Length: 311
Image (cartoon, rainbow, N blue to C red; front, side, top):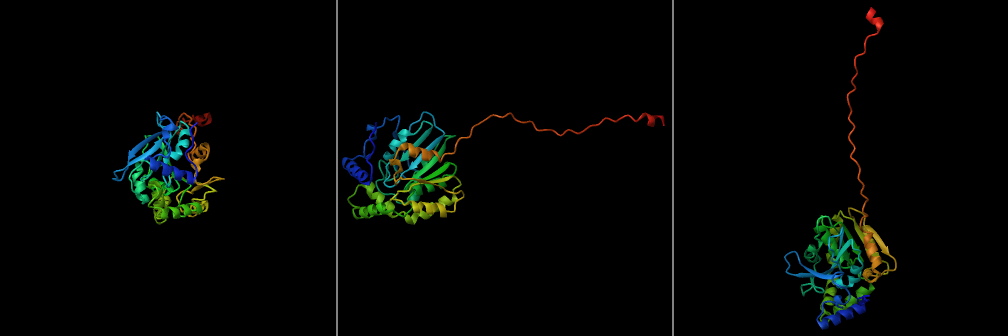
Protein backbone atom coordinates (compact mmCIF):
# COMPACT_ATOMS: atom_id res chain seq x y z
CA UNK A 1 0.00 0.00 0.00
CA UNK A 2 1.45 3.40 -0.93
CA UNK A 3 2.65 5.63 1.87
CA UNK A 4 0.91 8.96 2.20
CA UNK A 5 2.60 12.24 1.43
CA UNK A 6 3.78 14.16 4.51
CA UNK A 7 0.81 15.50 6.48
CA UNK A 8 0.40 18.76 8.32
CA UNK A 9 1.91 22.19 7.77
CA UNK A 10 5.26 21.50 9.41
CA UNK A 11 5.72 18.10 7.73
CA UNK A 12 4.84 19.52 4.31
CA UNK A 13 7.13 22.50 4.86
CA UNK A 14 10.02 20.27 5.89
CA UNK A 15 9.40 18.01 2.88
CA UNK A 16 9.60 21.10 0.67
CA UNK A 17 12.95 22.09 2.21
CA UNK A 18 14.33 18.54 1.79
CA UNK A 19 13.16 18.36 -1.84
CA UNK A 20 14.71 21.75 -2.63
CA UNK A 21 18.01 20.68 -1.07
CA UNK A 22 17.97 17.47 -3.14
CA UNK A 23 16.97 19.30 -6.34
CA UNK A 24 13.61 17.46 -6.61
CA UNK A 25 10.30 19.02 -7.59
CA UNK A 26 8.29 16.25 -5.89
CA UNK A 27 8.54 16.02 -2.14
CA UNK A 28 8.33 12.26 -2.34
CA UNK A 29 8.95 10.58 -5.72
CA UNK A 30 5.53 9.63 -7.07
CA UNK A 31 6.87 6.61 -8.98
CA UNK A 32 7.68 4.90 -5.67
CA UNK A 33 3.99 4.62 -4.84
CA UNK A 34 1.91 4.62 -8.03
CA UNK A 35 2.46 2.89 -11.38
CA UNK A 36 2.00 5.08 -14.45
CA UNK A 37 -1.22 3.40 -15.49
CA UNK A 38 -2.79 4.60 -12.21
CA UNK A 39 -1.34 8.10 -11.74
CA UNK A 40 0.85 9.71 -14.34
CA UNK A 41 2.66 13.03 -14.59
CA UNK A 42 1.94 15.02 -17.72
CA UNK A 43 2.49 18.56 -18.98
CA UNK A 44 1.01 21.14 -21.32
CA UNK A 45 1.97 24.52 -22.74
CA UNK A 46 0.56 27.57 -20.97
CA UNK A 47 -1.85 29.77 -22.89
CA UNK A 48 -1.89 33.56 -23.17
CA UNK A 49 1.45 33.81 -24.94
CA UNK A 50 3.38 32.67 -21.87
CA UNK A 51 6.35 30.47 -22.72
CA UNK A 52 5.82 28.16 -19.74
CA UNK A 53 5.40 24.42 -19.36
CA UNK A 54 2.75 23.50 -16.81
CA UNK A 55 3.09 20.17 -14.99
CA UNK A 56 0.16 18.11 -13.73
CA UNK A 57 -0.88 14.68 -12.47
CA UNK A 58 -3.69 12.81 -14.17
CA UNK A 59 -5.51 9.49 -14.31
CA UNK A 60 -4.87 7.76 -17.66
CA UNK A 61 -8.01 6.34 -19.31
CA UNK A 62 -8.23 4.28 -22.52
CA UNK A 63 -11.43 6.05 -23.54
CA UNK A 64 -12.66 9.43 -22.28
CA UNK A 65 -15.18 8.95 -19.45
CA UNK A 66 -18.31 11.13 -19.22
CA UNK A 67 -16.77 13.57 -16.72
CA UNK A 68 -13.32 15.10 -16.31
CA UNK A 69 -12.51 16.68 -12.93
CA UNK A 70 -9.97 19.52 -13.21
CA UNK A 71 -8.33 20.63 -9.95
CA UNK A 72 -6.62 24.01 -9.53
CA UNK A 73 -4.64 23.66 -6.30
CA UNK A 74 -3.91 26.22 -3.61
CA UNK A 75 -0.77 27.93 -2.32
CA UNK A 76 1.67 26.24 -2.24
CA UNK A 77 0.44 24.36 -5.31
CA UNK A 78 1.48 20.72 -5.13
CA UNK A 79 -0.49 18.24 -7.22
CA UNK A 80 1.26 15.30 -5.55
CA UNK A 81 -0.89 15.71 -2.43
CA UNK A 82 -3.88 14.68 -4.54
CA UNK A 83 -2.19 11.43 -5.60
CA UNK A 84 -4.21 9.22 -3.25
CA UNK A 85 -7.49 10.72 -4.48
CA UNK A 86 -6.38 10.29 -8.09
CA UNK A 87 -5.55 6.64 -7.47
CA UNK A 88 -8.95 5.92 -5.88
CA UNK A 89 -11.01 7.61 -8.58
CA UNK A 90 -13.52 5.24 -10.25
CA UNK A 91 -12.86 4.28 -13.90
CA UNK A 92 -15.87 6.26 -15.17
CA UNK A 93 -14.21 9.51 -14.03
CA UNK A 94 -11.01 11.25 -15.08
CA UNK A 95 -9.03 13.76 -13.01
CA UNK A 96 -6.16 16.14 -13.67
CA UNK A 97 -4.51 18.19 -10.91
CA UNK A 98 -2.10 20.99 -11.80
CA UNK A 99 1.04 22.43 -10.28
CA UNK A 100 0.11 26.07 -10.86
CA UNK A 101 2.61 28.44 -12.55
CA UNK A 102 5.58 29.00 -10.28
CA UNK A 103 5.17 25.79 -8.26
CA UNK A 104 6.34 22.18 -8.25
CA UNK A 105 7.45 21.05 -11.68
CA UNK A 106 5.75 23.99 -13.44
CA UNK A 107 7.36 27.09 -14.86
CA UNK A 108 8.28 29.93 -14.45
CA UNK A 109 10.85 30.20 -11.68
CA UNK A 110 9.36 33.54 -10.58
CA UNK A 111 6.05 34.01 -8.75
CA UNK A 112 2.95 34.75 -10.84
CA UNK A 113 0.93 36.79 -8.38
CA UNK A 114 -1.81 38.04 -10.76
CA UNK A 115 -4.77 35.63 -10.56
CA UNK A 116 -5.92 36.75 -14.03
CA UNK A 117 -2.60 35.69 -15.56
CA UNK A 118 -2.79 32.34 -13.75
CA UNK A 119 -6.32 31.74 -15.07
CA UNK A 120 -5.27 32.65 -18.59
CA UNK A 121 -2.21 30.38 -18.51
CA UNK A 122 -4.14 27.37 -17.17
CA UNK A 123 -6.98 27.52 -19.72
CA UNK A 124 -5.71 24.56 -21.84
CA UNK A 125 -6.42 22.13 -18.98
CA UNK A 126 -10.14 22.63 -19.66
CA UNK A 127 -9.95 21.09 -23.13
CA UNK A 128 -12.05 17.93 -23.38
CA UNK A 129 -13.13 15.59 -26.21
CA UNK A 130 -16.61 15.89 -27.64
CA UNK A 131 -19.22 14.52 -25.26
CA UNK A 132 -17.10 14.83 -22.11
CA UNK A 133 -18.09 17.36 -19.43
CA UNK A 134 -15.74 19.23 -17.10
CA UNK A 135 -16.18 19.78 -13.36
CA UNK A 136 -13.73 22.52 -12.36
CA UNK A 137 -12.47 22.46 -8.76
CA UNK A 138 -10.63 25.40 -7.25
CA UNK A 139 -8.92 24.53 -3.97
CA UNK A 140 -8.05 27.24 -1.40
CA UNK A 141 -6.17 30.03 -3.27
CA UNK A 142 -7.06 28.21 -6.50
CA UNK A 143 -10.79 28.90 -5.92
CA UNK A 144 -10.59 32.50 -7.16
CA UNK A 145 -8.49 31.40 -10.15
CA UNK A 146 -10.99 28.66 -11.03
CA UNK A 147 -13.84 31.20 -10.93
CA UNK A 148 -12.00 33.34 -13.50
CA UNK A 149 -11.27 30.30 -15.67
CA UNK A 150 -14.93 29.24 -15.69
CA UNK A 151 -16.12 32.72 -16.68
CA UNK A 152 -13.47 33.16 -19.38
CA UNK A 153 -14.21 29.79 -21.02
CA UNK A 154 -17.98 29.61 -21.55
CA UNK A 155 -19.23 26.24 -22.70
CA UNK A 156 -16.15 24.40 -21.46
CA UNK A 157 -17.10 24.09 -17.78
CA UNK A 158 -20.30 22.33 -16.66
CA UNK A 159 -19.92 22.97 -12.92
CA UNK A 160 -17.65 24.87 -10.51
CA UNK A 161 -16.57 23.71 -7.04
CA UNK A 162 -14.89 26.09 -4.57
CA UNK A 163 -13.15 23.68 -2.18
CA UNK A 164 -11.90 25.23 1.08
CA UNK A 165 -11.89 28.53 -0.78
CA UNK A 166 -9.46 31.20 0.41
CA UNK A 167 -10.89 34.69 -0.12
CA UNK A 168 -8.39 37.16 1.28
CA UNK A 169 -9.11 36.65 5.00
CA UNK A 170 -6.62 34.20 6.58
CA UNK A 171 -7.45 32.24 9.70
CA UNK A 172 -5.06 32.17 12.69
CA UNK A 173 -2.77 29.43 11.36
CA UNK A 174 -2.51 30.93 7.88
CA UNK A 175 -1.90 34.41 9.34
CA UNK A 176 0.96 33.10 11.48
CA UNK A 177 2.53 31.27 8.55
CA UNK A 178 2.27 34.31 6.27
CA UNK A 179 3.84 36.57 8.92
CA UNK A 180 6.66 34.10 9.60
CA UNK A 181 7.22 33.50 5.90
CA UNK A 182 7.39 37.22 5.16
CA UNK A 183 10.21 37.59 7.68
CA UNK A 184 12.17 34.69 6.14
CA UNK A 185 11.25 35.38 2.51
CA UNK A 186 14.85 35.42 1.28
CA UNK A 187 15.84 32.06 2.76
CA UNK A 188 12.79 29.79 2.38
CA UNK A 189 12.43 27.53 -0.72
CA UNK A 190 10.82 28.84 -3.91
CA UNK A 191 7.39 27.29 -3.43
CA UNK A 192 6.98 28.56 0.14
CA UNK A 193 8.20 32.01 -0.90
CA UNK A 194 5.70 32.15 -3.77
CA UNK A 195 2.86 31.05 -1.47
CA UNK A 196 3.59 33.92 0.95
CA UNK A 197 3.70 36.44 -1.91
CA UNK A 198 0.44 35.13 -3.39
CA UNK A 199 -1.53 35.01 -0.14
CA UNK A 200 -0.34 38.48 0.87
CA UNK A 201 -1.49 40.07 -2.37
CA UNK A 202 -4.75 38.24 -3.11
CA UNK A 203 -7.35 40.37 -1.32
CA UNK A 204 -7.12 43.35 -3.68
CA UNK A 205 -7.69 41.05 -6.67
CA UNK A 206 -10.86 39.38 -5.41
CA UNK A 207 -13.01 41.95 -7.22
CA UNK A 208 -12.21 40.04 -10.43
CA UNK A 209 -13.25 36.69 -8.93
CA UNK A 210 -16.49 38.09 -7.49
CA UNK A 211 -17.38 39.62 -10.81
CA UNK A 212 -16.72 36.30 -12.54
CA UNK A 213 -18.89 34.38 -10.08
CA UNK A 214 -21.76 36.85 -10.54
CA UNK A 215 -21.74 36.25 -14.30
CA UNK A 216 -21.65 32.45 -14.27
CA UNK A 217 -24.73 30.51 -15.34
CA UNK A 218 -23.36 27.09 -14.37
CA UNK A 219 -23.96 25.44 -10.96
CA UNK A 220 -21.59 26.70 -8.23
CA UNK A 221 -20.80 24.58 -5.17
CA UNK A 222 -18.87 25.58 -2.04
CA UNK A 223 -17.44 22.78 0.13
CA UNK A 224 -15.77 23.87 3.37
CA UNK A 225 -14.57 22.16 6.53
CA UNK A 226 -16.01 23.59 9.74
CA UNK A 227 -12.60 23.18 11.45
CA UNK A 228 -10.72 25.17 8.81
CA UNK A 229 -8.19 27.46 10.53
CA UNK A 230 -6.57 28.60 7.27
CA UNK A 231 -9.62 29.97 5.44
CA UNK A 232 -12.41 30.44 8.02
CA UNK A 233 -15.71 28.86 7.07
CA UNK A 234 -17.54 32.01 8.22
CA UNK A 235 -15.93 34.00 5.39
CA UNK A 236 -16.99 31.45 2.79
CA UNK A 237 -20.53 31.21 4.20
CA UNK A 238 -20.95 34.98 4.20
CA UNK A 239 -19.71 35.16 0.63
CA UNK A 240 -22.17 32.48 -0.47
CA UNK A 241 -25.05 34.35 1.19
CA UNK A 242 -24.16 37.85 0.01
CA UNK A 243 -23.04 37.11 -3.54
CA UNK A 244 -25.65 37.94 -6.17
CA UNK A 245 -25.33 35.07 -8.64
CA UNK A 246 -27.54 33.84 -11.46
CA UNK A 247 -28.01 30.56 -9.59
CA UNK A 248 -27.99 30.11 -5.81
CA UNK A 249 -24.62 28.87 -4.54
CA UNK A 250 -24.89 25.41 -2.99
CA UNK A 251 -22.98 25.45 0.31
CA UNK A 252 -21.77 22.19 1.89
CA UNK A 253 -20.39 22.17 5.45
CA UNK A 254 -17.94 19.29 5.95
CA UNK A 255 -18.32 18.35 9.61
CA UNK A 256 -15.03 17.95 11.47
CA UNK A 257 -12.88 18.64 8.38
CA UNK A 258 -9.95 21.04 8.27
CA UNK A 259 -8.55 23.05 5.36
CA UNK A 260 -6.92 20.07 3.66
CA UNK A 261 -9.88 17.98 2.57
CA UNK A 262 -7.60 16.02 0.23
CA UNK A 263 -5.69 14.80 3.30
CA UNK A 264 -8.71 12.91 4.58
CA UNK A 265 -10.14 9.63 3.31
CA UNK A 266 -10.21 9.82 -0.50
CA UNK A 267 -13.61 8.13 -0.56
CA UNK A 268 -15.14 11.06 1.35
CA UNK A 269 -13.67 13.68 -0.97
CA UNK A 270 -14.65 11.73 -4.10
CA UNK A 271 -18.20 11.38 -2.75
CA UNK A 272 -18.35 15.13 -2.08
CA UNK A 273 -17.23 15.90 -5.63
CA UNK A 274 -19.57 13.28 -7.06
CA UNK A 275 -22.48 15.07 -5.38
CA UNK A 276 -21.64 18.09 -7.54
CA UNK A 277 -22.18 16.07 -10.74
CA UNK A 278 -25.81 15.85 -11.89
CA UNK A 279 -27.24 12.35 -11.80
CA UNK A 280 -27.62 10.83 -15.22
CA UNK A 281 -31.26 10.45 -16.17
CA UNK A 282 -32.38 7.01 -17.29
CA UNK A 283 -33.03 6.96 -21.02
CA UNK A 284 -36.08 5.20 -22.36
CA UNK A 285 -37.30 4.86 -25.91
CA UNK A 286 -40.80 5.92 -26.74
CA UNK A 287 -42.53 5.40 -30.05
CA UNK A 288 -43.39 8.69 -31.65
CA UNK A 289 -47.05 9.60 -31.40
CA UNK A 290 -48.80 10.43 -34.63
CA UNK A 291 -50.71 13.69 -34.43
CA UNK A 292 -54.45 13.38 -34.33
CA UNK A 293 -55.99 14.80 -37.51
CA UNK A 294 -59.28 16.63 -37.32
CA UNK A 295 -61.14 15.31 -40.40
CA UNK A 296 -64.14 17.19 -41.76
CA UNK A 297 -67.50 15.64 -40.83
CA UNK A 298 -69.11 14.69 -44.15
CA UNK A 299 -72.86 13.80 -44.11
CA UNK A 300 -74.72 12.18 -47.00
CA UNK A 301 -78.10 13.80 -47.94
CA UNK A 302 -81.00 12.01 -46.29
CA UNK A 303 -84.05 10.96 -48.46
CA UNK A 304 -87.22 12.97 -47.88
CA UNK A 305 -90.00 11.31 -45.85
CA UNK A 306 -92.66 9.39 -47.88
CA UNK A 307 -95.38 11.80 -46.82
CA UNK A 308 -93.44 14.68 -48.30
CA UNK A 309 -92.92 12.71 -51.56
CA UNK A 310 -96.70 12.01 -51.91
CA UNK A 311 -97.52 15.64 -51.56
